Image 1: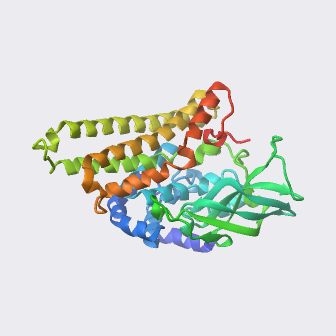
Image 2: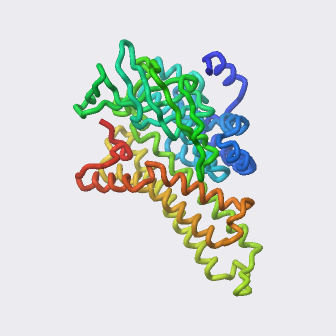
Length: 403
């Protein structure tokens, strides 16, 4: 357990980046470091302690801590830029950074006293699944929480863990505040209070340590629970979709790394059949140009829609229907486009891509796995279309809609 005194001592002992420029610079400096550690990360099936400390020292877990609380206060655009840079080094490390920095975002929904404790260490790491897969039985002063959750990315090095539950009272489901049949609430507890299960044997993102975890009859005080539909504060980060905004940084960074790698590879390659250098080979020229075109379009859609959303939220205005959907579609497209690009490059490089010395193998597997995340699946597109047409979204949370 990280105590407030230990956190304060660590904070004083280490001078960490605390501005957007410093954080992005440190993330860019980590690209070769993370790339060199990629084999160890994948082999360990979690981030090694040394990599976690590299990320912590680079300030990536604190990037969402508000400036008024002594943090760098990066907005969603800046957070995405940092995640994108890290992903150029290693996808699993970037994924864990993207998940782990949600601590100050969850703090927007917690009581002030709990949020203050959670942020006593500005570099605290949070992991866990917010979807209501568990059961929280209401008891005096809080809940008895039981259940099993999956995809706990970064849980092996987390300080805090969240776990989504449906609330029950006297053995029966409790209706939601808006009268819905079930009440979705998210529980927050120390990592040590959950049992971590060794389940993460996967094709890609192997080093993210996204194990299952469980609890049986864990008491969680009322003040350590929250709803994403009931923020304590106001502002652009007191919104349900705040934890989703920087996700596209991972696929965009991986696609950029793959493109840079193949362009560098092309400098010394010759097309045997045509007896031409790759730089003069039509199919190579087309593959690189198409990939750059698609990545540029995907990247501009992500950052353009985020900037527009940020401007609206910072004025305190409501996001209209189309602007809400813009960021959602750009997010899904980033995952799709990145996978398409890396598949194309993998096919271009051909047989040499299948050997482990080629990073294309890992990048392809990583993108295949992250494309399966619930936030990058077709149900999100259905939800966007339903929202635009006045229908019923299957996944309203992906739109930032929580009762």
